[in-house]
Image (tube, rainbow, N blue to C red; front, side, top):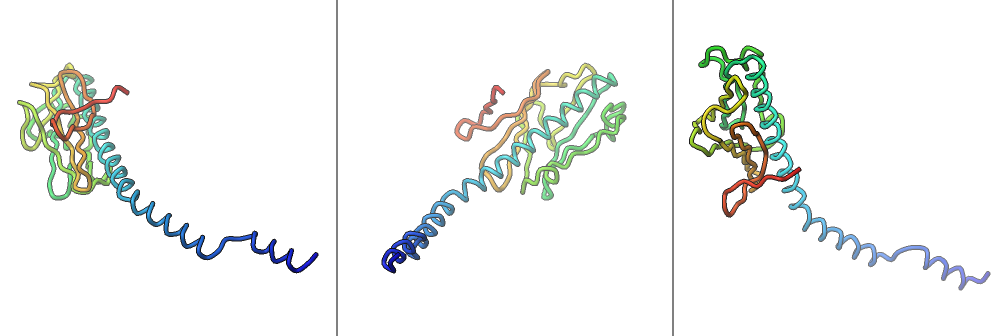
Length: 183
């Protein structure tokens, strides 16, 4: 085998420094473009999880109202530390949620959403938000929509409570209405 043939085999075995630098530069550009979208998606998913946790906790309160045939009152508040769902048993006598020791839910700690805030829309809304389930498990008063927002994302999720249904959706930025998936 000649030296010329070995030199040719050696050149074909690897990449040049220029090729490696161009590849690295392309990877840096692509990752810098996609990184903010990945972070936004992650924050949106944490906020969605907070809405699902809230829905689950409200459903548990509804179930306890039916089981004990008593009123169940849940209060949702948000402050500097984040948002939490409390059982409002001190102001309501015979509160089935308090009797069943339904624990408070700290949405900010459970989901890790930074700056989680909760607002309400509907004629029965108050500050802090109070949700009352009657002994039959239906919502006392008119339908309410609870909106959840975080400081790290522009997306808002909503938990809609009507007479018998609790569902999660996202808030449409232009109209302010909630959109619910069919799944």
